[in-house]
Amino acid sequence: MKKQKTETKIAKKIKRFLKSYKPILIALIILVVILIIYCNYLLKSTKVYTFNGKGDYVEIYNGVISLNYDVNLLEGSDITYLKEKDIVVVDYKIGYYVKDGDNLLSLAVVEDQDEEGLSLKAVLEGIDTFNIKELNSNNKFFSKEKIELLNNGLYFVIEAKDKKGNDIKEAVKMDLIKLTK
Image 1: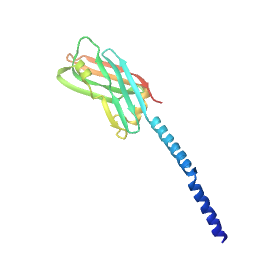
Image 2: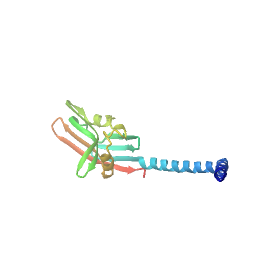
Image 3: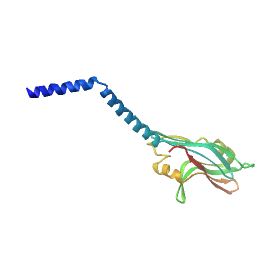
């Protein structure tokens, strides 16, 4: 009998609790806490950088690197050839690199050879392969190591050979600005 009365008292208390505003309030508090934690995770997992730079051969501006939990993006910027006289190259390797100690690791590189020669200006200003979109899990361009090395510096490197066999080498350090925390 006592056991039955205790159960009915507990059942009444539970019913009274469920009929009040308290369960809704508790559920809303839990939901808000979960949303705050999730938003904080999203903010911390997204990194956005802008970059620009100028060397003897090129000026680079409006570059963007966006790294987040889902997709990594490199918008390779606007590249302007600065020399008055164009150079015809037969071999070139041009691209973005990150610095690892004394070495440069390729991030996005274009290379080609042509016996007849190509205009360096046309090659530089026509490159659109520096617009990269990659799933975070792919790691072809944006490995964890390269993402960490972005803080050491981003470089735009030109290595080319003209028709006469002269080497053209330039490494332009980009002014890299981190826009997010």
